[in-house]
Length: 63
Image (tube, rainbow, N blue to C red; front, top):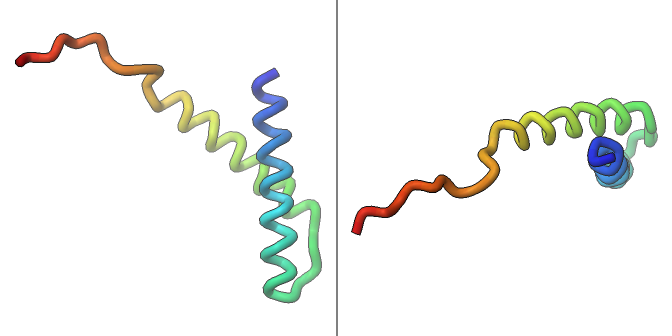
């Protein structure tokens, strides 16, 4: 389920960015471009989440 929601929100945010940028530069809005970028961004999010550690390490501090 987390894969679906991550893709869903990434898709919406990338489509909004795609719409604004295409309007600013005066080109046509293309859904396909946003879809490809949202898939790539979703994969990148999961790769970064797998690399980052879960929490703080359990090492005792030396005082």
